[in-house]
Image (cartoon, rainbow, N blue to C red; front, side, top):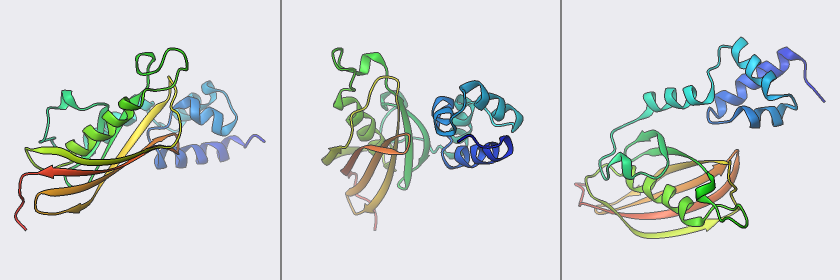
Length: 186
């Protein structure tokens, strides 16, 4: 059942506020309207397109990565608070998937999560000491993976980072990363 325009626009704004990384295509599916209708609604509400929303989040939320060069991070970091939390985005492309099945190769999802776990560490040295990972659903070409990392525990030379990766709101990967770091003062 289609919603009235005002109701749809109100829900559209709430949805984008809750998840600024959602695509127009996903919004169109969610609201049962065309992509063009979503774009017109966004324009009327002065909500920027996805690329601009990502840049806005990144400019507001980015500390400087210490543990590795930015070009070595797999995925695009859009939120980084060292030793607290981080978010990165990976658009799964044809080169990331198996040619026969179109399913993303697991090492790309792991690389995104692991590099985010390294990047979140507020230290010049961060190495993965141990990782416990779970793939919970297949990811296909054309999907956007949003990885969210959170520091759970900091000890003298170890930090536990939990990373959960989502497509839309669905969990596709999770991992607990025990990270080695230079000894910290306690």
